[in-house]
Image 1 (cartoon, rainbow, N blue to C red):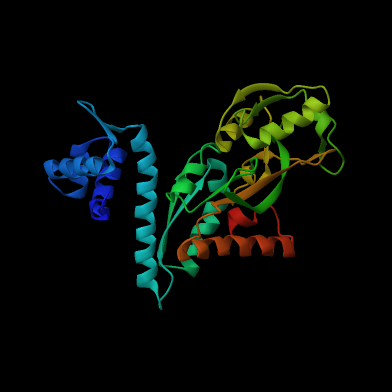
Image 2 (image 1 turned 180 degrees about the horizontal axis):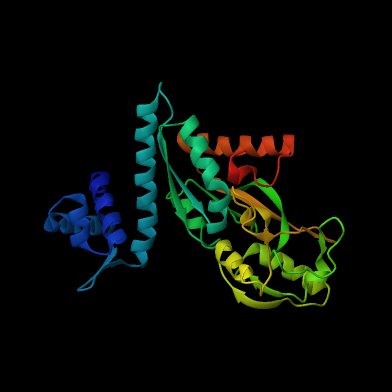
Length: 319
């Protein structure tokens, strides 16, 4: 394939068509004539020697080869955008877009602080947050360059993905104010074994925190009484606020800037359980200057927390 056949605007046309599922919608978004856009994609297919779009009356979808090419095209366009931003920013302040993947819980914990700190330190940086609500399948956006990094609860090690600890916070039993916990200790903590028979609402099965606490229960020959599941900590706390259920969550997922939302949150001991939040990035691609600046803010905050032993609410309240 001759290099001149792989023109950048053809990659843009193809990515836009896949994202919108329609040649007509892509043409409107890019302000080009649909026949011209269609012709350019056809020429791209001819240059590649393979069909990359499946066309039907309902729109377009990528073929198997198209899915592979799509990830590469997105990465190329992203790197080009980064190159342009960094070239323009040479000798001036850091600026550019930073794309971050977060789960619902981590966005509640980190986002208020991160938005404020980034605006104050780097007004030329624009944050784009994809609140996925899931810890699964986040590696492809990192590998393709669609996301600069992800902030998620700790999961197993993945090939090519660098993981850095941001913060570790205690897991607590979450109950309504008028709910009595069995065998609560004088210091306000509660033993793990004492909560095994409580009616629980939990994160979904594959959530890393749930996997850990169920493993501890299994070692004691017990199974939690799980009455409901949800992927969002705010939904879990609404179940708890009915006074009929308990949950187990990291304290940061319950605490807001105004307090504990009318909930009791004794820490779990014997064993003491904790939740770890990690920053994930693709190890084979250096971050852009803007992404590197935001990562540095997060790491600096982490180091201050460790040195000063600040409270659990530090990230979410901005203290």
